[in-house]
Length: 215
Image (tube, rainbow, N blue to C red; front, side, top):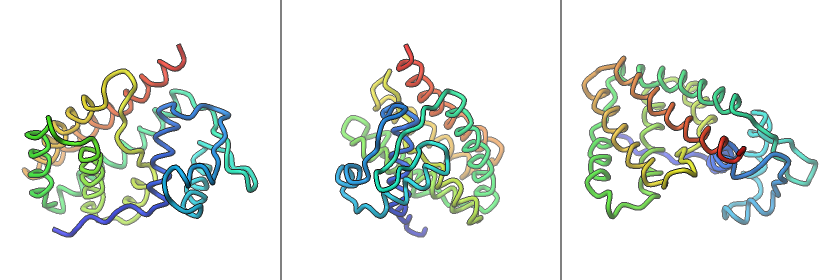
């Protein structure tokens, strides 16, 4: 099995900022400083600038000449639209991965170990495993454009502010094991349905955040 490459720095920055905006960590009209974000994330200004351009094209921020960006106000429909596209793309990706006989043995071992070691595993372990599973499925779909689109929409682990993050990650591990098992068994339709359920739960987590902040 080939090693999983890390996302480009600008893509990782964009995913972190996208998640922060969709989860309400940044509110509408809040200013994002190029320098401050680069310092916080420990990266140069170049990938942050590239991430800003990506988020601007998605309608999440408005760029300001040499002054960073302003976060746009979003509503629940924006979150739903975002996840509906992710669901369409990733459900298709997993069906193609099954058709292409994706080898999930290593990922399945890793998730079962996380399940077994849940009392000592670090949050970072769940986050990385989650990213690796999704990226492996996109890659196994064997369509570079599909991979690119999935990567551009990535918003990481969609925890909410209602329940402890660990609860989301433990549920995700169970869903990942179910998903990987379906892939291993060649059950494309079942794997697609599990992916849809998995991403819908993430969407609902962010909607819960939105509703709580609107109260």
